[in-house]
Structure formats: structure tokens, C-alpha cells
Amino acid sequence: MRRAVVLGGASLLLGAPGAARADADLDVDLSALGRASSRPEECGGTARAHASRWDRARTPGLMAYCDALSRGYAALRSSPEAAKAQAVLAEHALGGRAAPLVLMARAAVRLGKDADALETFARALRLSPKSLDAPGALHDYAVAQVRTGKFAEAAASYRILVPRAELLGDTRDEVAVLVEAGVLVMSAGKDALPEAVGYLTEARRRSPPLLRPAVLAALALALDRSGREAEAAAAATEAGGTAWLDADGKRAASGAPDALALPPGEREAMLGMVLLGTDRDRALALFKESLALGAEWSSPFLERTRKHLDAASHGRA
Image (cartoon, rainbow, N blue to C red; front, side, top):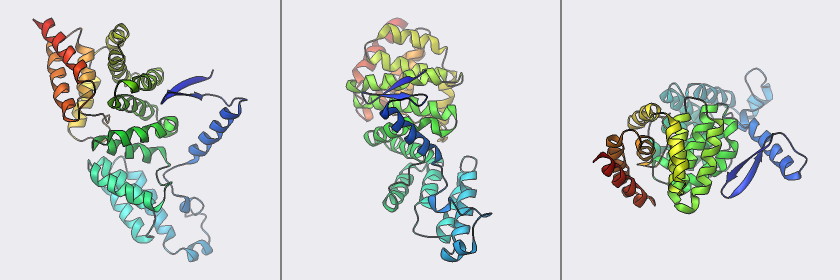
């Protein structure tokens, strides 16, 4: 069965290849993207077992370069410092290429050095505009943009990334992208709410049990800001608690790379929405924190947060 995802006001069809030309074009694009990986083009046909003597002679250092990148990407999640070291080795083996810079930048994101990561990503893009074609690289780029307050730029990155999210190869990563995109685009204001609800509704459809509370909390926030209060309350109730979001908040505070990348104050607003009907004291504290953090970047929903703050105060009284 085919399904539609709303992207920036447009409807994108996902599913089995169809007869329509537009659908066929989309299927071709996704197939091409599916072949995109962290392995750079110059290493695609020159793996250690297959490289000819001519390949080695024509490009001295190529084998060491590709081997270092392979080791670096293998270590990226578990040891970003080791990944960074391998990126340096790759750059020394074959300079002037974008791939080592992308690996360095992705390691920097995992080390919490987001500003450094963006500078390095920019260097890679100057060398090759296609250097962020791999969905994982684009996600790390978008995360660094969010964490450095570049929300408009990050939203543009997520709009490119969302149709490719399935290519990340992990349902949790895919759903995390949809949640981050949904919450982020709300930073543009009320006109962006239909797009946000579209992302989050799709995330709800795809989400595994572990991520479901975060998905529903984000959806409740978007629905509430859209004036769909009854639906927001139902989603908040269905979230069934805040344990996962609490843990995610602790990971974010510690700089853990696997925490959801959200604008300041939005995680607190999501938690407040879930707790508004069950723990008004804690909801009150969360909405206060959300209001203070949102004011730092001029969130367009400060007035809505104030209304929830008043509601929580009156409820407690």
C-alpha cells in the first residue's frame, strides 16, 4: 500500500514502484541514494583485494587512504577519537580530498565540538559539493547546525534528509530524524506547523516501542500549538510517561551524541505536555524552564508556553 508524507507543503509518495513517471523517478533516486555510503567514490573500485598494480602506481597512497577511512568509519560510533585519528592518517596518505574532512567532522559532532564540525564540513563541501550525500553524514551536519543555533540552515538540511531517512539502515535513527525535523521546523512559527505535524505523524507510524513516548510527546506539542487541543491531550496521554525523554535529556546535558538534537526548551515543553494532566507541579517547573530557554532564541511559541504555565499554576493551586 502506498503512503504519503507531507514535506514542506508537498506530498511525497513512498512505497512500491508505481506506473506514474514521478513515482518512477523517485524510485530511481532512492535506489541511487541507497548505494551511497560513507565509502568515497575514489575507493569504490579499489578495495585492497581488488586493486591492480596500475591503480596503486597511478595514485600513490590510495590504498592507505581507503584503509584508514574504512577503519575510521568502523570506529566512529564506539570511539570518535580513534575515528578522528584515522581521518588524519587518510588525509596524510592522500591530501586534498573531502572524505577525510567529512569523517573528521562527524567525529567532532560525536565529541560535542559542533562549531569545529561545521567548519570542517564547510571545508569538505568546498572540495566536493557531493561530500554530504551519504544520509549519515547529512544527519550529523544537521545535528551540528541545530546545536549551534542555526535553525533555518538545519531545517533546510532536514528537508533534504527526511526523504532519505530510510537509507540510514536503522529504524531508531530513521524515527529520530523525523522527530528532530518535526520539532525543529516548528521554530519557524505557526505556518510551519502542518509540516511539523506531517513529520511527526509519519514518525508515529514508523516508531519502535522505545521511541514512541518521545514521538507522541513531540506530536502532542505540535498539535497543541496548532490549536488541536483534544488531539494533543490524547497523544500526551498515549505517551504513557516521561522516562525515555528524561533519560534523553540527561544524555543531552552530558553531551552524548545519541541524544535528540532539539532547539533549547523544546524537550522541556514536550515533557510538560505529557505531565500536564498527571503531575502539574513538575509540568509547572518544566514550562518555566522551557519559557526561559525559548526566550534566549525568541521562540515563536512563548505566549503558548505562558498559557500552559498559567494553567499548571492554577491547577496546582
